[in-house]
Image (cartoon, rainbow, N blue to C red):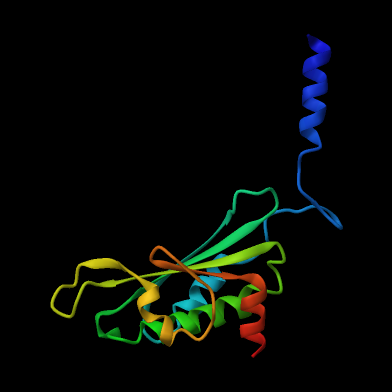
Length: 152
């Protein structure tokens, strides 16, 4: 019984994700600096930036949620475009094991109703200058697509 437990424990030790230089650790992105940069974008009232595992060992997603103000109107698309550019410029150099970037937005229901609601970004896709996958109300951009977009 003890030998079975030892074999099982040794097998689990080898399950970590490894890259060419060894185990892939969480990206060293300064999420506070990224958040502050995003909050400087016209139309953004607040931002939240976080890194989480995408479910596979050593692979991460960087999520950015912006809150837009009542005066944004149809300007959500340009705000998301600029948010994607800013996030890419801030993270692509240091976040080498970030595989995807997730974007979402919250804003007032209407000019007459300031209740905050999640905005469905696919409604603005003709105004968003970077390609990605519209999943639910958000937008997911793969690393290679964000690199190409930021490179111009």
